[in-house]
Amino acid sequence: MESLTILDNMNVLLCSINTLKRLYDISAVEVGQHFYWQIGGFLVHAQVLITSWVVIAILLVSAILVIRNLQTIPTFGQNLFEYVLEFIRDVSKTQIGEEYGPWVPFIGTLFLFIFVSNWSGALLPWKIIQLPHGELAAPTNDINTTVALALLTSVAYFYAGLSKKGLAYFSKYIQPTPILLPINILEDFTKPLSLSFRLFGNILADELVVVVLVSLVPLVVPIPVMFLGLFTSGIQALIFATLAAAYIGESIEGHH
Image (cartoon, rainbow, N blue to C red; front, side):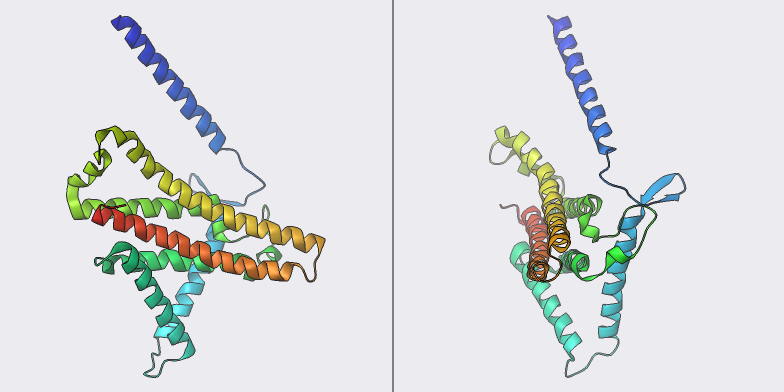
């Protein structure tokens, strides 16, 4: 009987190893062509890095231009930045609660990076820049970027829970009953998946729709679709930042 149990366990282990191997093989599949840089022994996805640096440069230059000469009577740029900061504070406070203060920079960074990245796909003429392989697009049009942002969010809410409650944070997995342990664990895996694929899918679909319409009806029809894309891009940035703040608040307060 014991030998049969050991044999069954070995079969399960072998099946798990084969499944992981197939998943690893799938992860190497690429759609389209990509432009890479060889840095040491690593291949770096240059398209995403280039566009991400452009977005970061836009944010840094905008912030420097506004804060270098603050006025008692605010200028338009200063008013805009103060409004954005107040908006981010409101979102953070609503979702996290009274301990929102330390998390405003993180939520604000997520929101602004995603917002500017999404809008850059519609407003910046990435396609006129020729690369040896592939083409430039919004950073959030690449699954690597959205997965990285989702994983950062996961690290943030785990850190928030552990720093507030210590190891007692993990007791949430057996609440309200230990029977729900597998479901509660699965929930932490689905959070970054849903965050990353929602953002990636919406931005990719928006850019594909615009490209198809421009190729079919290049003059009038794509314009309202582009404006709709700008609106939905902003909404996606807000959804991502709001959910990130909600997950952090859930880890701190321990409620759903």
